[in-house]
Length: 202
Image 1 (cartoon, rainbow, N blue to C red):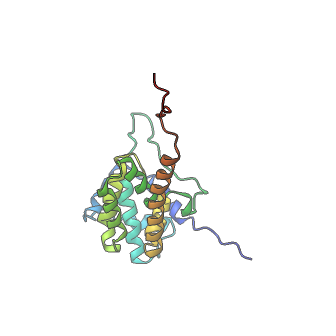
Image 2 (image 1 turned 90 degrees about the vertical axis):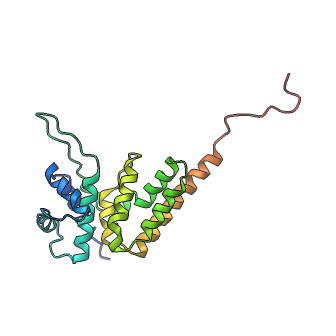
Image 3 (image 1 turned 60 degrees about the horizontal axis):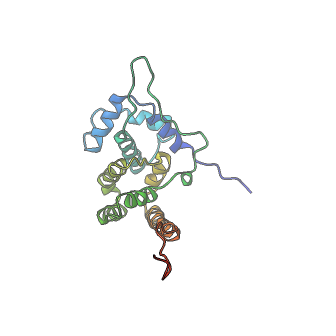
């Protein structure tokens, strides 16, 4: 029986993103708004990470991940010190190892006191086709950052490359499973107050 070799290209792609300088990250952020001038160098990044011959829709997904990555708060570089880079472990090539956007949106929903607008935003994301992913994912990543929730970039890269019903279904399952788990934990937790039996009060 032949063992299936894990695709390490998403991890390599994210590792390359972690090495980008601030100017390049700023270009990527502008690219999310439709200004793609100056990001021609992404083709070189695709080639270095094994995506040089990828389909156009796959490169669009990779470009979206790159722009979303650039939105995250960047480590500030002190004088004389090198900025920290966020390089994923070499073995983290399996997308299933990291939390999905669905799970993180579930955590966000709970952190915001089960706000209906958060669930509505998540459902709009699930309903998005590839053309609408840019806006919806930008909104989601921005919302997650308000609660210091950061996507697993390797997992997100794989999910957006294969965006479709399977990924939507997994994200939905993760979202509602997270909400359900929290509800079960709350129900199982002992109450902080105890009721005295009748006649016990003096």
